[in-house]
Image (cartoon, rainbow, N blue to C red; front, side):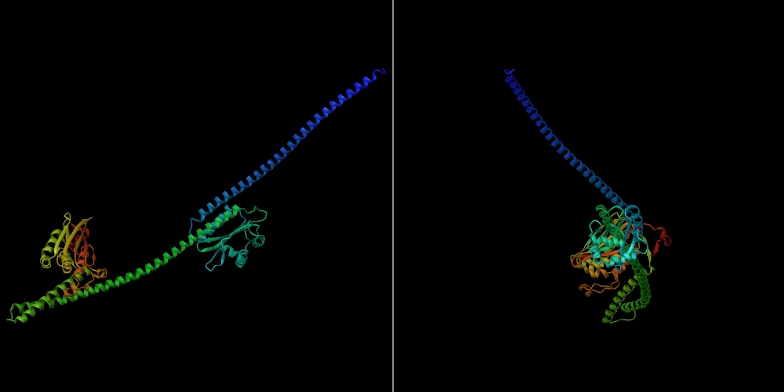
Length: 510
């Protein structure tokens, strides 16, 4: 036994050592596992924290999206309401009707408990035109307080908008006390001339708060109201101006009609006077001319040469006076409608050539050239040949008078839509614009060197114009100084008498 004890002790020690080693190994292994578990736990905690943050972000984003969607829906609703209101008020130009429609539209289309539209009158006083949600009798007090608030009025004039979003606390409290709202928008109504009024909308404290979109909608509404009112007022101004103008035109027309009647009466009196006087003068002139012819013929005895010469002058001047009187009689007859136009079929080409033959000696004496271009398709026309001859005689004679040597006188005629247009042109001294205006006046003669040296009555052109008008045509002049003058006139192509002319057979009394 004594010999075995050391072995036992050694075995026991070895076992203890091995056991201790195993325990140490187990402790080390568990420690490593614990560390790993702790690391995993930390990682898991971090992951949970990240997930929590992401969840919070998702929730926040979702809330923001819902809020943005609500704001967008609200804005779309506001824009739709604005479109309806704009279409409603833009279809009338009556200012009273505009505000009546606005009142109905604000009630049904915009989500505000209180609505107020104030407009400046002509004396720059604010007047209520739409008031919804306010107690009776409250509006005058509100208007009076607003007009006293110079700071707010000045801000409106500077195009500023007040709202419960952007206004400072004192201003919000003032508007809350004045108008009984916590959420509001107050914006000016503007036109090209400046501020013309204000728009107010608001809600109580228990209602939805005003948003940026609400502020934009109300500002756009104010602009639409301003534009519509400006259009209505411009229309009213134009309408009133038109009425005033129509009244003035009516009065002026009455004055002109009265003046025209007076002129016509004077003209008729003048024509009748000329007609009567011309008749009275023609009889003694005929006697004077007859006695002068008898004396010149020597039927009452021989007369001295000097007396014969003077009798010849009497005879010549008598002829001039007779021509003047005949022209006056013709003009007065045409003006008074007493002239008888003996309408017969005439060939215009032959008529112009006959006048040319008649005046050829005068043209040769002045070495003038002649040119004519007459449309061969012009048919025979119903004209008073004797009167129509006088048109060409007067116009061509006038051209001969004012055209220098080696000049050219031309006559052109063309057919266009049953109207013949005739042009008598010369290369003479021309006529100024001031003289053209009066050239057809009776007895008017242009003040130039030729007229100072050549006598005339100043009736030829006036008579030619009246004969043209008696045939249903018109006459006018174009001219350039030192280049020449052209007389234009038209004659309707009339080949047979119309039903209106049938009572005069071949004579038409104009």
